[in-house]
Image (cartoon, rainbow, N blue to C red; front, side):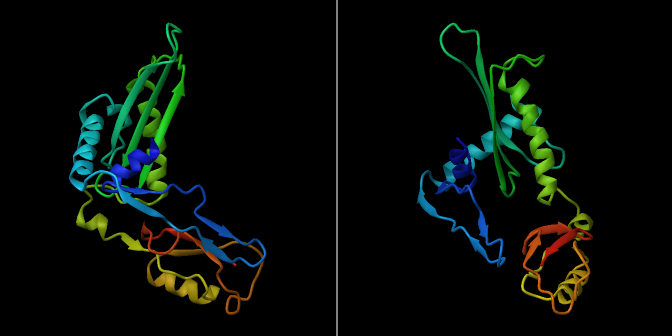
Length: 216
């Protein structure tokens, strides 16, 4: 289901799912990215766009309105089914993608036999969880909110690449981008110690003043 949702968000092109994004050698610090494998087009770009628009409508004014996140355009679909014949049990779900303007995250919430006050409908119990998850994930990933003013957009910068540079050089470059370098650990020689990994990674859009953690 997540692959299906991602395919729609990717304009109809199937991308093989990855469990691991990268491997890092614990001794050498060498990082090896796991290749993104793009497969065939599954549905037309027009169809994907139309379905994504329908998913946005579900959240904006339909059964998925409890999955809304302030500042972001969310698309989704709720689901409710019986767990067997005459069992009185249900499977409820919410699948979503955000933000609609530039899809970055796809999630699936599935609850087996929910018995809380919200009942057993997808829009009542699964969609609110989707809102909670996206409400934390999107800001954590520094995803820019939809409809921001020019002033707000001016506060957003792209994280520069500082991996492979000395701590001193990395700190200088990050300061020039109005970002804060954070180096945890013992006292080190900042001129000779090199940055092995950085978080957030390069090219990620973040707000000015964001902390960039450097590991050596």
